[in-house]
Image (cartoon, rainbow, N blue to C red):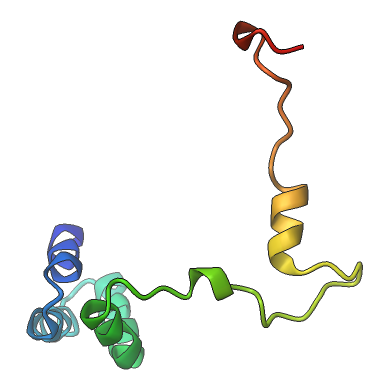
Length: 95
């Protein structure tokens, strides 16, 4: 199933997306039905991803999210607190 969905994404063809969702909406495996139903629910967004692959909302992610109690945006918090701090590698000749 994942190979077929990958083919849909790479092809950029909306008709393949339609066939994929139609096939898996009636699959006996509930997780696949749920996945296909999610694609149907967000059909316009998924379709636009296929039609406009060079457009991304990545730079805007979390820019409209409310700040946490410390006044930090989620993206800043992720970068500052969740990135493990490592000591420089001695093999590079750094102190």
